[in-house]
Length: 191
DNA sequence: CCGGTGATGCCCT
DNA sequence: GGGCATCACCGGT
Image 1 (spheres, rainbow, N blue to C red):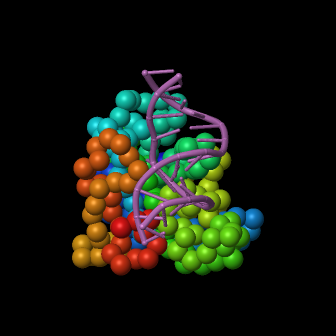
Image 2 (image 1 turned 180 degrees about the vertical axis):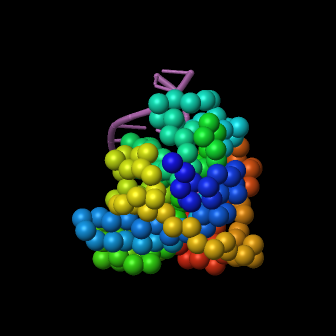
Image 3 (image 1 turned 90 degrees about the horizontal axis):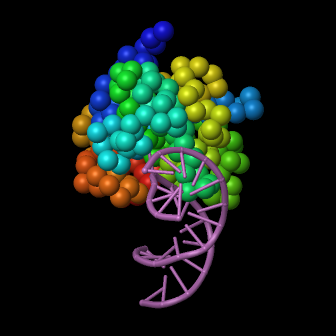
């Protein structure tokens, strides 16, 4: 079945990374609702050396080859999760890493999940986002039109409000301009 | 304020 | 067995 979300994100990873800026994520945790706005993204595509899909499909990356609008959650550095949104057509191993979000509501839950961090430090990094929203391996392959984790696309930001730069924390394809973030937003992971 | 580094487990070669 | 789409802390400035 093809959802509206599925259709909107059935584009290249960099295009999807732009579209996803400003989108909302609604996460229901123990009956409490948390809403955040996506403010920083990175695109990863299968002909991209830095992508998990660069060397082809594996059990871990199979989800990235599936329909757009599904969550790809992976575990890294022995202690952190990162959350991606699958993009592109079925058969294309591509996705967008959510690197930073701005809390919109449900502050108490976020504060609890990120204690003792406060303010911008709560959600200005990909693993921090996962901790704040209680995202772990259980949400891998989750369809983001369904509770308890829903993605809502918002009207595109104007180009003036989007900064493009190189990606963070990778050692290959370090010059590709596939990181996107909202201009002047204090939750950005780094300048 | 900034750079270096330890923590810690899973995936893939 | 190497390396990792990270984070927080520590020490020197």
